[in-house]
Length: 170
Image (cartoon, rainbow, N blue to C red; front, side, top):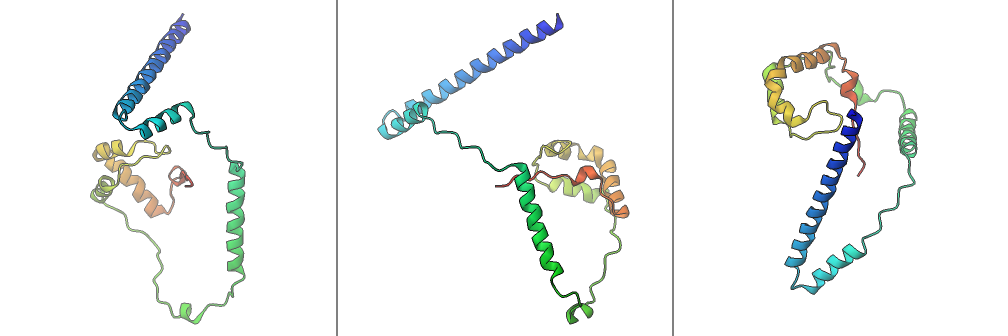
């Protein structure tokens, strides 16, 4: 009984969405035609796009495996150039007085809040919470966020969940 009701509700929702889509398309093209009524070139372009839509782009023959192989080989080639370089230290590096970084200082809650609020509210599908929402509720989450950040800075360990990224090639 419950399944049948859900199926009926889904069917009604689908019908409503199709009707809304048809109505939106109709009003969109009606307005477009009305505003272009005095310009034959625009009218021709509108009708051409409706009657002869452009063919969809052909699917790429590249796979994720091809992408991964390309970059793996590229990295290997770059690494080989480094191993072929002389390994003896240069005179410049012997006299370098650059201090080494042995530890990172922790951050204050106010600094975390300032950084959180100053960031652009862009969101990635990997984000556990939308950035705009995070900025809104950051004062409430501030002690927890600061603890995680300072824990990473003092231990030198970043949680695996924070190391994921989404790369979209352009």
